[in-house]
Amino acid sequence: MAKNTTSITYRSHRPGDIGYITYRHGLIYLQDQGWGFEVEKLVARLAAEFLENYDPEIERCWVAESEGAYLGSVMLIKDQEQVNTARIRLLLVEPKARGLGLGRSLVEQAIAFSRSKGYSRVVLNTQSVLKPARKLYHSCGFRLTKGLGEGSFTAGSESEVWEMVLDG
Image (cartoon, rainbow, N blue to C red; front, side, top):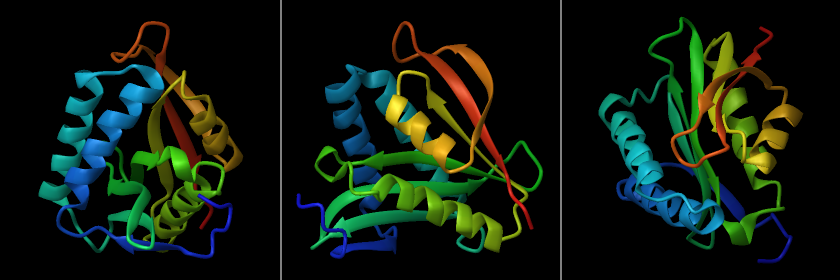
């Protein structure tokens, strides 16, 4: 894919998107990290929870595409455990679309939406081996707040919680 981002469009999810997002997570993480069914099961569970609980007033799933082809996506949900907190979930950028600023754009849209809905914080979970994602989150203003121990996807990777406090 050319480095021209003018043909990239962003939209809300439609029927079929959430299943496709689950499918792409399973394949891409298998290819990139060697992760198998554990990641696919987690993504399927989180995706199903999103569909079951989706509140369009305060939650969103953005799908990035070019000429109808899926390039990436991210979900933003209301965190059920923490007051006035949004949670970024399932950020994914297709390998052919990496380096275009697409991941940054998706995260920035989630942050802007969070601010517009009055959330005071945004949190997310990631894995320590996902260096490009960690670099992106840090550059967007997130801070690593805690490690959760070895991740379930691969030995030597730690699950992490990142947080951003939003200014009014």
